Length: 108
Image (cartoon, rainbow, N blue to C red; front, side, top):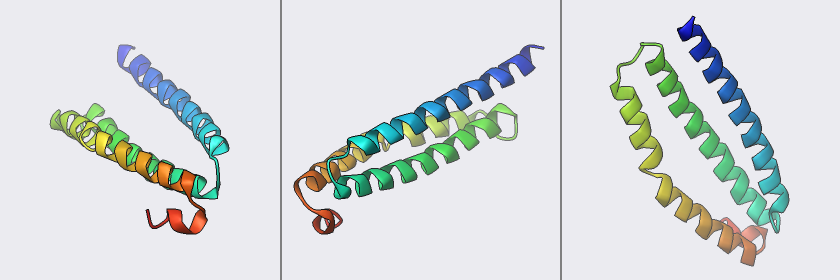
């Protein structure tokens, strides 16, 4: 009983987080100042979402015993390792996009 409750809790938590992520992404896109910022945000959200989905798949495979405990550690390193550089890159791109029009933001 405990294992199935944990699985249902994990699935419910994932569904709630997915819904919150979709609502947050819509709010962020609505708050963009221009088309160039929306383009940067769409790129960040799509690549970030795909990256997070792959890492969550890795964690799920580890949770079901398909992969060993090393997969949890690998997921943590792969998530938090590039996080600060990715946020810094996105911040620079959004700042450049806020000051420019659609054509010049792509080159920033």
